[in-house]
Length: 132
Length: 387
Ligand SMILES: [Zn+2]
Image (cartoon, rainbow over all chains, first blue to last red; front, side):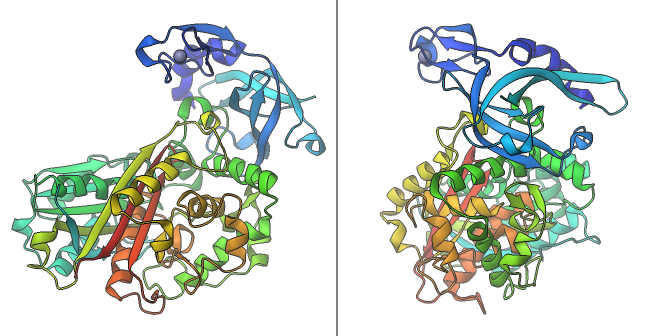
């Protein structure tokens, strides 16, 4: 994951504060940010917008086989979270008791370490979600 | 646009082929296809080769040049096509458009992946590249976990069970028993699948396609010229492709792959056919849930009915629609870039009546469905006899 250092920095507004995009022409909201509104294309006007930090689990899985960089986390839960504004995103779950993880469970964004690995000393931070 | 036919087909055995390199695989499949088509090397005008991740998996890029060089076909143009797990299907479609347009008369199409030279963790990372690197992989996604999210949601929406999903793997292992090219010749039971351990819940090891080496190739020409090479040309009746969001979370639904619906509808429209006309289909069962979504997205079954239909045996070789007679990705194996070509070859053999032991009776039309990533690209073809 060492090669992801530029990625960590480039995506800080999204990863740290859940900043997405809103198209002023059609009102649609996107996360992560987009340069072009797929609905309006050239007519679109994209501005930043903060996403709600609460939502619910839309689907989830417990991962038992991980790519390099995530071995120490195993097993861990991932989910598609549906935010209160209807936007869906992919995230790991954190600090969530197994028996509370189910479709429809309310969740809240938390700020966590994502990976720390490969001897290069790079620690990537970002959002995870926690079952309330 | 003119009609296009497959006049030759060949493939390596699929499996853990420790003693064969990437280039040996493509040469073996290519030579078999050229021999099957009875075509002279000098008559081949262009090559298209599907390959997803040779760089990450073997260190070798530039697969187009490798194909032309080692098949002894320099200096003709040779192009690598990449669309993740749909690379093979898209190579076929790209070659199809090149012949249909009249640009070339005879084209070789191959697909290859050499996957057993690196660790499972490295394969996991390489295949993960078929998803969204910045927003899925970075956040801990694995490729199985994306399909697991679809499976969980499907079970939630339709009340399907893990046992019903497991029926896909059981059927495909059974079909592979009579395919000499398949990676596995081993019957499995629902219980075997249920006891195989979670990879990404609710998907277990035996819900997942394996890591496979292999290559497959076909020779295309115009329908008009096809009879010069073979008495049994197989016509490509339709070729369609569609796209969707790279990231799973951006899709409208987790229980249907829209690009598959769009590509299948487009193919049926081109062919003037409907799902009930199809007698056998090779669909992209990279995970058990993927076959369930495929048979619904193509239109063989209504949404939410695919899992139960499979468990009831309606997709067996002697069922209403024979699905994955080759054993599918699950049991024939899934050398990623080769899979789309292998699907076409199974359709060719079935239509020629050469699928010994797994032959579908009274077959008129065959369909292939090849998916890239978690559904961001899909290629669908329909085939019929051209004789
Ligand atoms: Zn817009």
